[in-house]
Image 1: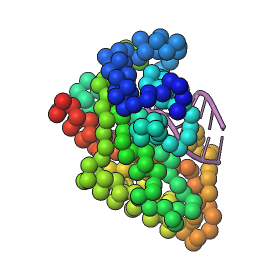
Image 2: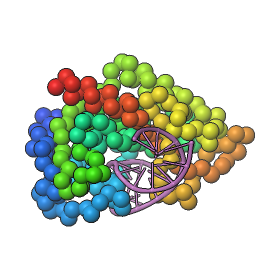
Image 3: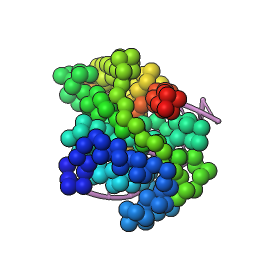
Length: 224
DNA sequence: ACGTGATCATCA
DNA sequence: TGATGATCACGT
């Protein structure tokens, strides 16, 4: 936690209100940061801009963005109708030495125990500089959502532990999926194969499916 | 290579 | 047209 990070949840939410309704061009200027031409060759640009404004600790540590508040920041692209446009990356998937892992001590559970969702206009037809930041809100999984996430985590992790990682596709899981997560197809890491031998596989990450995040977004905006 | 921030772009 | 598999940038 650096000096610029919010000291309380209230302060964090206050900063969210400050950026809501502003365009990415305005926010980039406030941050003294050049506008990205597009996201094609800088896919995390929006997320990092929002991180700067909210005072999230930069870096690539496998922790929540606001560890002292127990909060993870996620920008989520939506269209003008509130429709979710992309899946949501949660964290890298453990592939080796997974025997002692369980849902309760998993990275997934820790990461999304409390999420600050920051909706950002994301239609590709809208120029990046004109896209507007929406109203952010805090969310924690309810009992049913937790159960679904746990079921998917268990299903996926069991396959990995049994050496069946190559049989897992993005179709597995009801609300969460496992997909490749790497710079390119040449990135490889060790995994356990069908016969217990060591094999090389593409690194994977956990992603929340759109139907799941859509229910979260819809519920918030309908109640609000 | 790995973990962070994610969206792209091809094909069913 | 939408989802799956692939990919981009950066820090360590």
